[in-house]
Length: 239
Image (cartoon, rainbow, N blue to C red; front, top):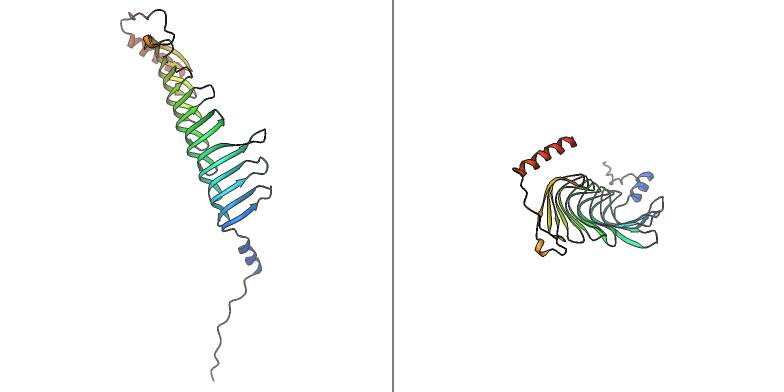
């Protein structure tokens, strides 16, 4: 006589596996606290912050709101910091990658000084525009948080420099327009100083404070060659 056996139930889950499964964070959670008192509220995936969320640092009172990926600030987000007087102020809004500013964003230094443009690895890199507290603006290329490459600096009085930059200084070929007095200096710049160039009138009739007399024409036989030789000299000196 055959004896039929019923379907056997699976063995019970080991207790440590059950605890681990229940402790693993997945999906949207209420506020989760870290050991240092910091807190996060938002989406999780595979026990990591992933998706939309808000992270608050207890030690500083600063908080980040935006995208997360694999436990890091990655995507678009806003960082708000607490000032010395206890007020909250937005410091940065833009792209992030692996907890660093990356891509296009806006960085606020104060109420009247900020940068908008490209970032790479937490620094201003690429194209960007900087608005300074003194009313001047810079628009152009950046490298490692410094003006570097080609750009234009416009002062509060509308005088401006257009040309090359190196390590935050005017360096290379450039033009400085003295709009207030109607003159233009064009030449070679080294460490913020024009070492060799030509000064000439430019819009003198429309200048606010024009020079008393126009600049006479130069009588050099070959002024372009003079500038070329000067450029070679200073370039060799710079090494």
